[in-house]
Image 1 (cartoon, helix red, strand yellow):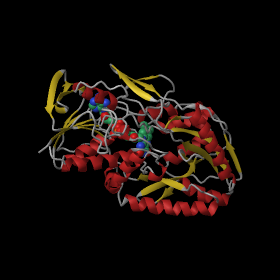
Image 2: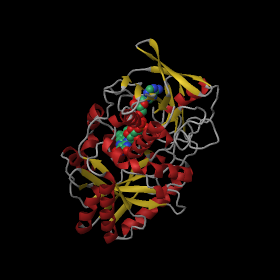
Image 3: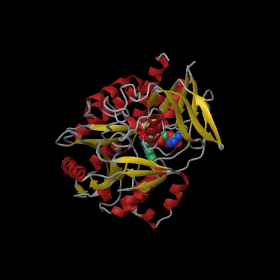
Image 4: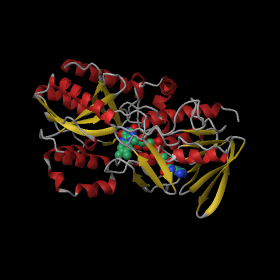
Length: 463
Ligand SMILES: Cc1cc2nc3c(=O)[nH]c(=O)nc-3n(C[C@H](O)[C@H](O)[C@H](O)COP(=O)(O)OP(=O)(O)OC[C@H]3O[C@@H](n4cnc5c(N)ncnc54)[C@H](O)[C@@H]3O)c2cc1C
């Protein structure tokens, strides 16, 4: 039986452990506690990611904070041929990944049926040249946990690697103040977009390779409420179906896709019930804070007079009562696309330094996209009030951190098409860090598909 060490039990790590433990001996090394969430120390060099926590340490990782919305990254929106080939190779794992992420039923069929239904509805309203897409929310939620077959170790620190001629033989770590080690035939780093580059750096340095580009290429979805739109009551009936559609075992939330003139950027605009037509940045920021926080943090954030703003009350009532309030006025929430550029993460002793912002070129493209959105909505709306031009203040992280490990053959710190690190013979990377492009799509389903494809590859690999 192969000995496989998985580092990190977030979304990717948990699926990897559970799948690989069917045929191999798995040791999990997780920095967080099993059932307790802690947050990393963060320093922001430029823009703060968001007013709420966008990642954490704990068994289950980011899935402790997420909303479980499942959507694929559309291959037609991806520019890089190498990454689109990788995404295509993960397609056979879609239904299995969705099932492991709480979806009951056949995801691919349910997703394509609801997208077709919503596209038909959209075409009956006006010119939706770029179409619509749907986020699918399973109705049943269970926490992601590793199964009992996995030899799981929590609260570990100072992970390091013993390597000979490019092959890692042992992973060392500290637990309960004791130095420990585990033998490894294969190692998978799944510590998330912000922590994985540091572990890769240590693995390469165990092979005497100094890597300079680690942590570069960070991408996210700059997202924000950017305006309001009002429809006649007839049109509003259809738009309420976009906002939320009950499909029995899942709920769908439909957004308008808008592509930039250059074709490289695609954004996604959701319409959420509102009451007023006013645009107030502080109210939008408060709405994002409430929507993005969870548990005790959300209750604390609710203690604000802003809770009683009519636009917030509509959203709160629909969330708390689990019903969508029929409305003819809607908030516009847009998820914009970023491409890999100068954003990065660095890790120094115990602090993640995050160097993230929205560039002026991106802002220009986003404002063009908003003009297009306004034109499209104006075809069938009574009134629009979209903020233009927006600046970076209107945008925060969509919490879909990705891209800090790059795909390619040139550098030792890059990964190949099987997610193997070029500089090591038996080290693989699998988590949000390997996603090179994500249009507007939430990343969870793609991370799950990548994890299952890697599991299949490693199961068949001779060591
Ligand atoms: C508020 C919010 C809502 C979201 N909603 C959605 C949604 O609806 N749909 C969707 O698809 N996505 C959503 N996301 C994003 C989603 O949660 C993440 O994309 C996903 O969890 C990332 O998975 P991962 O495996 O890459 O990393 P993570 O889940 O972050 O896992 C990394 C794991 O590694 C551990 N770790 C870190 N450093 C070390 C180390 N040095 N040694 C050992 N272990 C380590 C961490 O503790 C963690 O368990 C949301 C995120 C947030 C914050």
